[in-house]
Image (cartoon, rainbow, N blue to C red; front, side, top):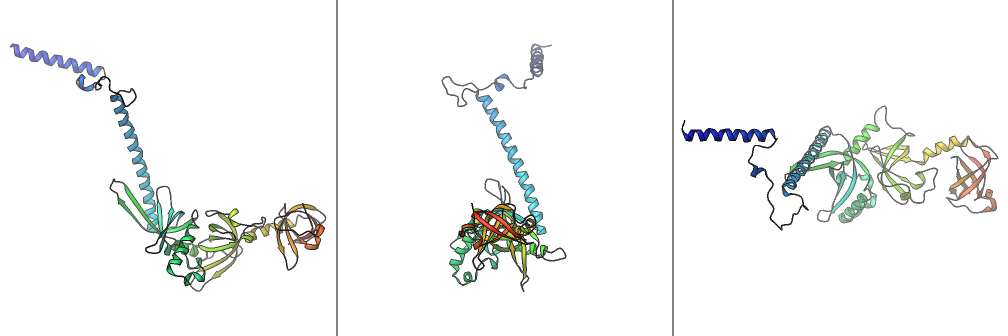
Length: 364
């Protein structure tokens, strides 16, 4: 055996011993200088606050991995929601969204309403697919186009916060420059209102006069509130909102997005197939008043609040703490004082009838 052959065998044996000892120690099969942390120059500042750059870099790699994993999960969840919306788009299903923003374009005199379906998706509804013809008075159609656009903008902004139904009229997913996906959804509110009217006002189970239903508050003014009842837009006056409370300003009691129980007083069917409703929230309370009047007894006294005053008949309507209704004539008020709606009084019952009772009142 030559000297050169002997030197090659010795080098192979030494190499096997090095890699075997490294594997037993759990180290990687790399030279020691490649696996060592980089040396830092003397006097140089460490931006990590004393932490070795090697470990800081490895920590950043872990943080970025978690960040991209969370982002991937969020995109996957958003994709699932997008697929659900796609199925609703194909079936023409009704979706509820909350109005969050209103945009007005001076160039085209158009109004666009943005509504939020969820945290990830918003829908764009144009004014011609949002407002019904019954939403405006006759003087609106006689005004110039610019003035009508301003009125539509004000009416739409009054609905911010309200929940509205719509069907998807179009949807598109585009990829942006940063490789993210931009989702665009266009909605049609009028089509959804028409579907709801066909569902609730046709067939054997159609809504009838006297039924109690749930109304969604669209906008609120001082003397009235605009409601959406089963696909029909209607309004209710302040004295028809609550039978037990004297309402001076509807905005103190309601806001867009609230739900209100109302009773259907009358259903009007127009020649074109559309429907108009007369509803009242106070009617529900009046039914309770009739039931509570049976608990009154002649000669009993109770606390109450003045609800209405009929000037023609000179009679005050007082709602007692028990929910009953007592009629008090102006001459039956102790001291002949003039009472105002909202005044607290003490009522003494004199006569009881099925629908009302009569008595005297004294201001507290």
